[in-house]
Amino acid sequence: MSEPGTPIVKHALPAAHWPDAQTAARSLLFATGRIGPLTTTSRSWVPAMVPWRATEDGFVTPDVLSWYGRYADGAPGVLVVEATGIRDVPSGPLLRIGHDRFVPGLRELTAHVRERSGGRTRLFLQILDFLSIRRRPEKAKFIARFLAVTPHHRDAVRERFGAAAAADDTNVRTTLAGCDDDVLRTLLTPREFRDYAYGAREEVSDLHLPHVRELPQVLPGLFADAAARARDAGFDGVELHFAHAYTMASFLSRTNVRDDGYGGSLAARQRLPLEVIAAVQQRVGADLAIGARFLGDEVIAGGSPLADAVAHGVAFARAGLHFLSISKGGKFDDAKQPNVGEAAYPYTGPSGHECMPTVRSDARGPFGRNVELAAAIRRAVRAAGHDTPVVAAGGLCEFTQMEAILQRGDADFVAAARQSLADPDWWEKVRLGRGDEVRRCLFTNYCEGLDQKHKQVTCQLWDRDFRDGAAVARSHDGKRRLDAPRWQR
Ligand SMILES: Cc1cc2nc3c(=O)[nH]c(=O)nc-3n(C[C@H](O)[C@H](O)[C@H](O)COP(=O)(O)O)c2cc1C
Ligand code: SF4
Image (cartoon, rainbow, N blue to C red; front, side, top):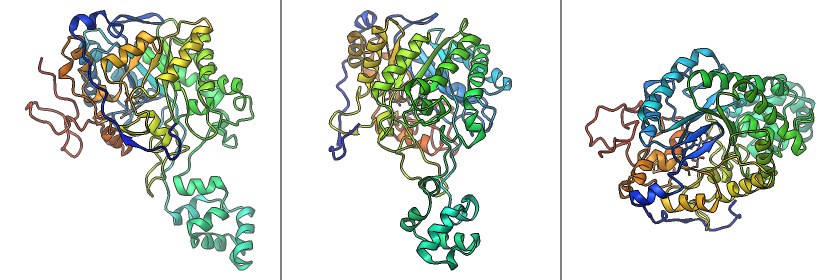
């Protein structure tokens, strides 16, 4: 994490050292890899990226097919399809797999990727659960509708404003509604003030909520059902989403203080993730590669540091996962306050920067910033006697950089999200010795800004480029093309 006060400077992209085709052919990057039961054609990996292209009720659309088809053109060793919800609940234009009705569309997706990559890309589905988060409310609405007036408020209002102000609940609400935020902060509980200022957000430690209390009983089955549907849809593997701001990452976190045996100590925090892994293995272990994405460091106050992640990695490897994909940060805990009417976004604070670092960064810069986390986890997993492959991500975008990571044994696969979005053909260009044709990501996060606004994700380097004259799908406002122009070989 950047030390407070560390100067932020703009970093140049790492110099490009593109190999000729023979050098590429001899490289580790383009050597075959192994993930559990699968062989991959290379060690290249496109990690999950949500593009906001599903239907409002979570089905695959033609735009979803072409988004993944475009990555398949570049034939990465592994392509991970975006975080896909395991419950049968509305979640906007994000993919869902919480019911069998989603399987036919996802089957079309796997067939499409297989065809476009010539069978060279292994396709995984990232499956996730998330807890409810509300938009930041207007003050009047929060106080009138969402706040449950309790003796705490009556006492606090009476003490500050006198007995009349606390005479009944209506007076309490009227008084609170007239307070500015500094005063309100002293009259509400810290959680109530957060609900007001950021929007209410459920946490895994909210044992007073029955559906949160029951998560350990419910989630193993939901993940296993989702994995079985992924198998039926033709995916090669599933990636359990244990990272960022979502339910399973919150169970693993030191911030999880559940007192029902699923929080507190390291072993208790790992318990549900291990039960999910076991349920998924029991259901589809013979058919699919099964791995997890989790955080090498949460990078939040009171959160889990690398030492926890190392222990999680060893526990998951011991449990028989086929791969460990390491991310960093991306938490709600330090997210910026959203505007009224908007929801908090977990990539706006310091931990968000660690997840998707930009060129405006501290002295270390964004490039390969998180590799040391993957390396430490891999070392511990190897020391414990497991050969589970580890995937590194975060500012990876250049051949020599990636090859060095693989040669040093810091990771077994190297993932590039934004570089692949900027140029989905880039792996093929590098493999064929045509690296000087790569359209290089600028790492300024225009794409992430679109994700934050729940807009269809595109790249600033190509979304207004219509020179190819192709009849292309456009964004809802008609201004942006949705897929990168084809590479004219
Ligand atoms: C638009 C966008 C959407 C993303 N969606 C997901 C996601 O669904 N699941 C996930 O684990 N990571 C997601 N990420 C994070 C990336 O997988 C990756 O970890 C991060 O961008 C850092 O890698 P990079 O430097 O190669 O971009 C997303 C990133 C971007 C830019
Ligand atoms: S929008 Fe910017 S950060 Fe995102 S992929 Fe394109 S160049 Fe990279």
